[in-house]
Length: 277
Image (cartoon, rainbow, N blue to C red; front, top):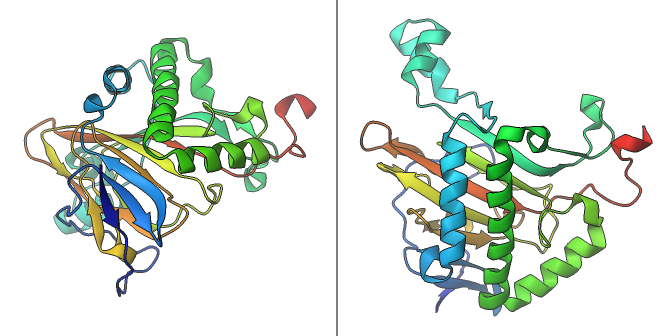
């Protein structure tokens, strides 16, 4: 696997800025290296490294696209723009927009501002029709961990140690993560994943059909990673400002899904569980 050296570049991007469409310039399998340290990697086609992982992700994606898996509909910033531009109702504007939704699995940290000062599990785990999706995602998570161990063993070792130190076993999703989110057609403004455990990586696997865009871009390095179908990005999302470029269907029914595994803080042994309340 080739090495992609990450070098800082000047830019004026700030957190909260809208992410524009940018053509990807990272399109081949590579290890990301900064100051001599491997900090992540990119695989263009996971099937070339793990047929099992590709099959599991295909199952998970098919389930996500079905009505068997509960989703949370996301509000789109362009709904108001469409409503204002065309002089139509909000309902009409939503109908003209590309649907965006997500599904969270695994653990959710305490949210005192929502009157829930204890960690919990995603409610999706209790939905019987979603069990195939949940099983496929958990197995895919474990297969992804094995790929990290194989391709970037230093990342695997450091992350396993960090998760074991910060997250009780009952709140883990696999060995290296706490949670998963599957996003349908969701781009994102520039941000930093500040709730992630430091020195850890996220896994982002893409499924897409008849669409372009939806690429992760990191202004600090002038790098935009191709999110082609069956690609996998392993990157420390807590480390830099990054965004996801707009997703543009090229044919009717086009979409881009991202299936993500990530490690969150907030599950220390002093946290209360639901059974303690």
